[in-house]
Image (cartoon, rainbow over all chains, first blue to last red):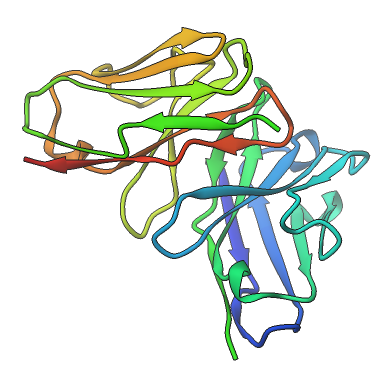
Length: 118
Length: 107
């Protein structure tokens, strides 16, 4: 069974940093590209970042470019999102998402909540 | 960047109804279009991928159609468990984009 379990969320002040983690199981993690997607409270879904299976390619939404860094450790079946200079508008549930062979975002984790407030 | 426009933003329907949600892309995305269902407090769940392919385990009352820029999600014989928010998403570009969502409420 495919499982994605996020962690690392919490309450931080504007300007502070946070590192999210996602541990994958039930599939060969190293063979799949991954996304981070977020959802602000009561709002829609927003793509945040993409990383290819071997970390060669990384892409970011304009709203987080220069502040967020995506990475992965295939030996640990883990995906990460390093977030710096956090803003109130980064407050959201952050989901780790697997990208299937047909380029579909097929499996989502349960999410980890990031709250940025003074 | 590709923009996705979804309509309506909400609708009211009764159990047994047929419901149609539309999604339009700002440029062609061929058939790289997925539909997700989200219930409060839970992660989105994949229903349809490649515009019309039903994800394993999803009831056959859900169907998708379209190609290019215009797409449709249809729920036939609406069931109580189908009341939720639905999102379209393009996977043509690595930089994903989602529609704004359609909330399906009980009439």
